[in-house]
Length: 416
Image (tube, rainbow, N blue to C red; front, side):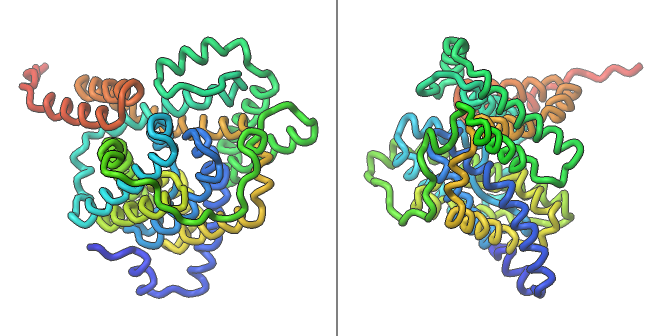
């Protein structure tokens, strides 16, 4: 069914009580998304305002048009290494065009009703590439977590490790202190005060310490300048046949990752709420979001699992919550953007370390390791290919290997 969940929710009746629930949950998610969107943009090799623009534009569209009642969209950590690699190779304008093309591919996938194809990707492959992305995200945060003196971090994983080893003597004790303190606050609040906005509290405490004691720790403003207090005007990236062909593999990777991540988030949201999403209209919403977002200079977007779960736990009634989350972020950008420039980069790095750990699926890896050896082998190979080569190659190779292994004759079961 190609009917947005918003239409269904409004048809069922929507009054002040529902609006109150959605406003509170939307504000809660916005508080979580604010530092996270900027941290993801920085880790992706661009400026923090690009993350805010993506969360506002794409987040609104995904909630308004999508097929999940509680899905929250925006930039996600899963895209960090893909976006970083595209920017390194094709520049930011190339990323915008690749994202726009990916949006078109997602739109077509939804119109041709390909939303159910995700169930054909074996679970060890999903766990392996998710864990691989987590490892890659961790590697992108080493520079800012330790304050290493590296002008530009290489995109290749092995080259990155070599650069970190070479720059290790340049680590900054105060930067590491702020990062470790932020990490400790987030972990402590998750254990003892799980309903509190740990990310924002950690960022606020770190920012106050840097300001009060005038610590020589790099901030958003010192590296990127002031954050704009308005949305940029829409503009088309440079388009040519040669560029379209050159960027097609990157566009396919972005579309594949956006589709998988968004539908996985929908499935988990269904498990948390007992409801059912509409996969094809969800892909269409992801396509529209990734067509419009780059027109405003935004990053690729998809469904964000952690923010969607936060939305559900905060008592959201329906998609209006996600739309209000985008509106709250826009309000912050218009009124309080200068404050965000004071955030220490070390604190944002700590935030992404937590995100990477949450993505690592460590419990799933342990569970797979206790199962058939072939499944664990597929997981490890997919993980390694994700880190060392390419996400698309990892998913294709992992899926092909998984099905090939299932075709092999199974060893006979010996009875006791």
